[in-house]
Length: 143
Image 1 (cartoon, helix red, strand yellow):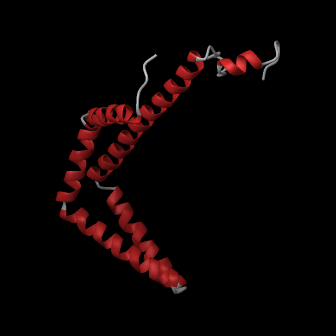
Image 2 (cartoon, rainbow, N blue to C red):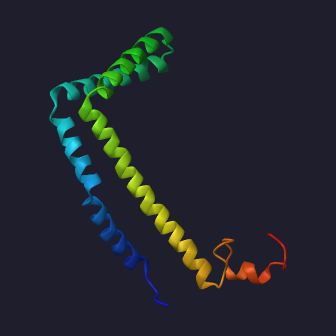
Image 3 (spheres, rainbow, N blue to C red):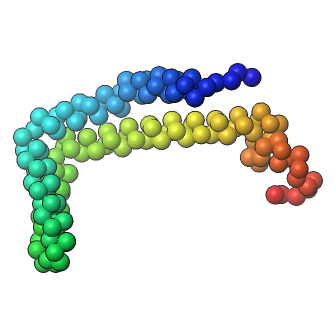
């Protein structure tokens, strides 16, 4: 069995990261993000939201309940207007797609490591038990 160092694994992870960054999902994300930053209307709405969020923090800190409520309503309205812009919808979907890809990769790695540990110890994949657990379990028991 080959032995790998942390440095070997990190190097492979960097290779995998490069592969992921060159997928259609990430390419679409980068294009959608660029379109958002090039759109003056969107930039203005984002700047307004950030400014209102700062106000909201101050109002909350000083207990200005009514003012906070009004600012939060303005923020909600601006966020809805942003969400109604097609390129923003595409950008948000691309964020979801990239995150899903990362989750799939993380899950595949985790599951493969677990399966390799179980099989390399002579365990039972179906029960998800390592060899040590299989050897030390009572015959006929389900634990």
